[in-house]
Length: 376
Picture (cartoon, rainbow, N blue to C red):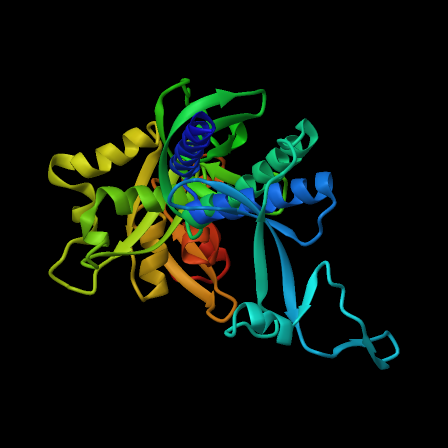
């Protein structure tokens, strides 16, 4: 008898250790694991022993598992309402119910709705089928809890920059280890021309978190314009304390980005802060962008000045806002700057348009004169 008790105690300790390991590994609440186990074992017991009024209780301190049958305390009159709304009285089922007056003979504090529990000993250990059933239920509960826990951890991370490790690769994607979950970095979302090595650390931008499928999907990108925004905020502390602010970013990944910055303090050089001492700050950002060109643009409330700034590296431009409401502007450039203003494959003009939110039409001085536009 002593040996049996020792075996029970040992199993209880093993169970507590197992729960502790699950909690640490999966990062979920221990109570969720206990409740899942109780539900699973109760289901298994009912299935194998045919006792609907039974439950399994696990002692959280000792790990001891006990099975109880119970009867529910009911009123002297048990009323039942049928589908048509008719109320009738029925007799109690003595196997699962007890009159309140009889219950009070056992314990005067019992009231309707309470239960009287009696510990029972199963005739034998749960069968393999019962154990398997319990295991499947527990696994499902743990998966659900783990999923909820991971979702809570990554909730609000859309639009944020994360650091991960390149774990796997297939024909279309890289899979980035983010700690408790993997993110998916499609190969079409990497910086054009960059080489990604297995096991390397990598910064990624979260574009979407999808919880509707079988598995939690964290979609990542390195070519999104938000990736550039977050790199600047990470590298330059003046963005965090509000000394300088970012108006916007326009990007053609792997080719050029235009980053518009400003400060409400006239004494602060926003562009200088982004460049850093001897260009150290901007150099770190360009390195992460694999050599992508970055134009730092100063924001101005005057759309003419803003558009001219946005078309850098072109200079000596004349900007005419032809429709302020629809945000349309004509920009006149001399022969030395028209190619710079437009850019290769018109990328410079497109990025300036995205940044300023103006439709920009770039004209030569000759074409501008034909349209009657005065050029200073």
